[in-house]
Image (cartoon, rainbow, N blue to C red; front, side, top):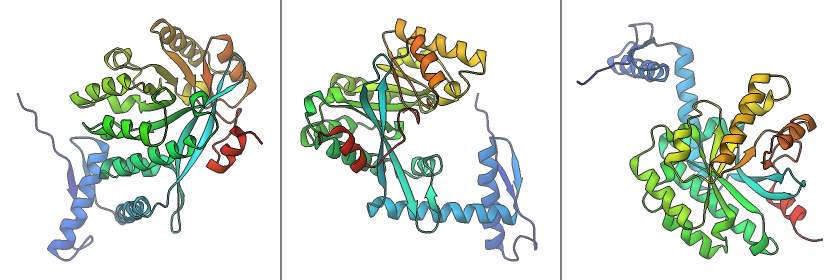
Length: 307
């Protein structure tokens, strides 16, 4: 049985346009707004909607230019082992400042990159920049873990080859590279994603399920794919000291992960109380403002290299 749904955009003459072309454009804008609300809905065109769409298109164009012109920046946030307070890794974060829009948060430009296909060149740029930087740090064989977020859209048949080249060209040992995948992105993952992840695991790359506990929290994905670590979402950590349900959920996730042979990372740790609670429950690694904000490559270089 085939089920057909519809998203409908509605524009009125002459309020929204006096020509066929103008009306179609407005109705099309309203239709995409309806799609964002889910199948089987309709939206009436409004001027505010038009402004939002124009801003989105302009942001998309400027992001395309920023990727091509190497106008993005990388930041490094420390990851700390809770048992002894030792910094054991850094997560690489992407930042974008636009002359017109100012500081554009990743929560805004990453979804745009994923929807437009820009996530592939952007993701490759981020990996290359990060690996080149870390390769300059002292004692690469004993160096810090390098954690990079990726999208399932990047996991094409040639992605493992690109990673192998980075390992060779940038002296980035596979055992030091961690790739983080958002849990939500795996819900509708293509069949070949599992094959690519298995290949990456064979190359020695550590795979981390990111944002676990934020939405789906299905252990099915931990079993289906070759993950080595689990990162607990900051939404659980934020209320760790005040919400007993979140605290119990965090404890459960740590215990289950350990039973599955996975290390556990907590993100968004901002208070000593959160740190102490996580350490008491056996969490392995943590990151957040308590241990340090994301800093430039130059600042991180000064922190890890001997004076």
